[in-house]
View 1 (cartoon, one colour):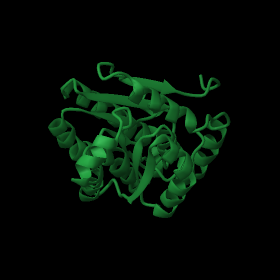
View 2 (cartoon, one colour; view 1 turned 60 degrees about the horizontal axis):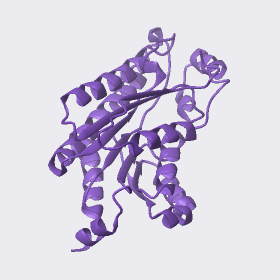
View 3 (cartoon, rainbow, N blue to C red; view 1 turned 135 degrees about the horizontal axis):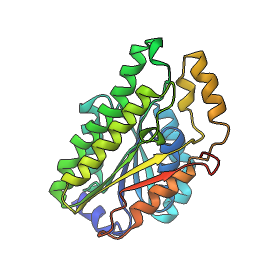
View 4 (cartoon, helix red, strand yellow; view 1 turned 180 degrees about the horizontal axis):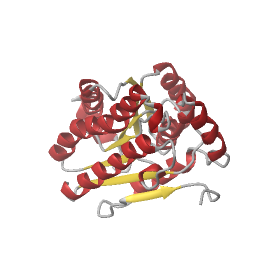
Length: 256
């Protein structure tokens, strides 16, 4: 009864949105923007203290719009954890409308540095994490007759630079997986890939190779704020059900 009551009280334009990697950067901006628009945002990440702070910071404005942020611990490399994340949202709200697969890592390095553990970490988070999200949400979307996948890829899915070989490989994989999902899915399931260029975030903080870190400092001299990506995702979600925004590339005007 409680679930049915909640569903009846939730306006159709207010969605139940799951966001992975929501504790900083793009994920944090997306969660805040969508909550302020009145959506119920289930925000997942390992740093739950930051999620709770985000929920408290946005609570008043989000509540006025009818939405809010609901923090949940999440490790996207664990398929059971991702499954529980999706089930939590469905149990609480009766449905899941959107899954934003944003979690990602970027420890860039040259291939001859042989940082195999870092390569594997990128594969685990950037590729397997996306697949775990699809595996958890696709049956729910199919059962309820609709849903929206949003994958945050990267300009690295379209461009390879020295030190980006593995990272670009994982982001091209994310792009390809999402495009395959779009082609295979029923029209009631919308699929969007967002490919950001240089965005102010913590991603570069994980780079351990000195040369790659120095190059990234120069490369990131002109960065846009995460809110630009949040606005792009908001635009894709707001389209009518018969409009599927397949891909958006967003980058600084100076990033040619």
